[in-house]
Length: 238
Image 1 (cartoon, rainbow, N blue to C red):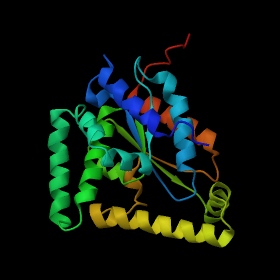
Image 2: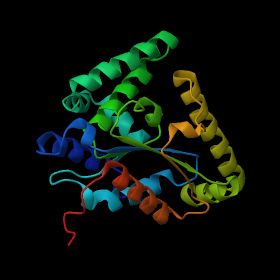
Image 3: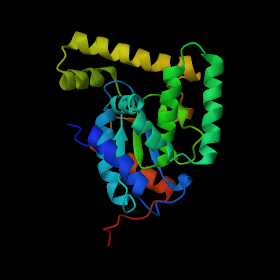
Image 4: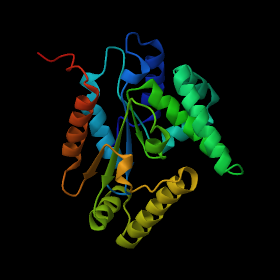
């Protein structure tokens, strides 16, 4: 279902970013965060969005998706973390330091893994040409000028049907899963960063996937990203 969301793609992305030339300064390397209600199609929209934007990446780069599982893999693998650090410019390091110090001041006893997550997401976004799904990425990268923030929402009924389909749950299990996942997301953002996940000021664009199908939502977001960053036309455009 999500063929372009896998570790192999992410490893290739790190190698390409390291070797790529002329991809522009950090502020010109676009990145996207996707926050979503459980069952609103976050991974599916991200997958289709990467496909839509791929022709607009510079030579040597590709749009790559990092979700929770792939970010966790980077956190566990020191060599990947070192490779990511290569892409972090000095100006971004200063802003990242401020964010981590603030986090330590509010949650000194339990924030170590959160700090590492913050660093990883920041480094990915600074490198550019990534779509980061979840993990408070919108708040973490809120001060980076190269990041576009999206929120996906939908009715509870629609989301229950989606979770039943994807995970082969019955209705009761799907409802319980949605409630626990949404509660965990709200708690994480509030507990560590002090924000309400539903605050519209956190996002450039909020899309209701009840009313806009996943493929259309990806195109809508993609068009907004192209316009926002004034990205050049596709390389194969006439």
